[in-house]
Image (cartoon, rainbow, N blue to C red; front, side, top):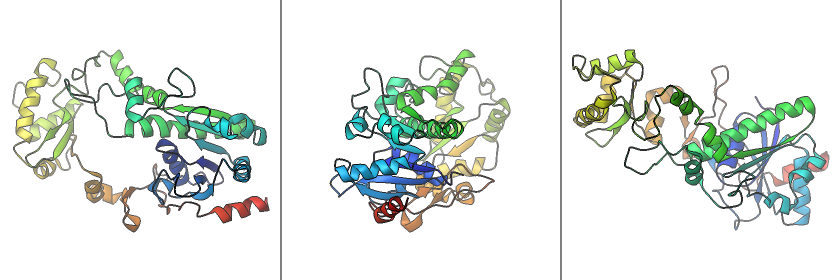
Length: 360
């Protein structure tokens, strides 16, 4: 879908490389400027995040290599960088310099705190950003410290995916206007924006400012349960017709308390009853019992287990080229996923890219 689009990525960590990988998955020509030598290496050589990209090794503090970087950026539709504010300017690659040579460039900046604000130049990580934005608040049971899947809500959801949306929006605008832009993609902004759905639920009165008392984090029918073998199953039968199937499958349809799905005063008691019930059998038992039903019950799988799950296998979601487990590109177009491309090695395409520049 992005054939003909060129993106220059300045080597970085986490959300920036992920955003560049996603664009490469979608067909963009992504050239990563990796640091020369192993001393500055910040990712594994041949990382999954470098799949589908080309690599040139440059030292941006070297005048000749800096000039090469400027020439590359002049050929690009977009740039991705993930430094703290001001670093690209000090390198001589700030937006003003780059737009002078390439007015239509979309200059994508990926940070945690954003380009402005009291914390803009301070250090932080995924957990700090989503803690500050409000996105971490509901991520645990009452009385326990909040915890979320590492990097998914912040670095990837609130960061990389918003950077990609910003870059693609900027490219569309540049194609129409000839004018580039600077994308300020901040994880605090994106992860807060992701809370809009919960804020809409709050307008209905079904979202509490206390953990464990809202529609999706309080009920017995919206949580995960421990099984006899140490595995877990997830339950989220929100709609009444699905809830009816859930309690019927468990033989609880005639239970007066379980019939009161939305009686919040019963939620703790019914949760405790389901905890005992699910703990009586293995995860495999519950998986077989609910298989094929609309009860909205699913086993909690590790990535390795997910790669063997029938549904995931049928869609070829998890793949292991050369023994490296990784997810297939997404989304799909016309029902087809893009093929996995090999990961580049550091500096692998340096000669090729320099030759292209000389031939322009």
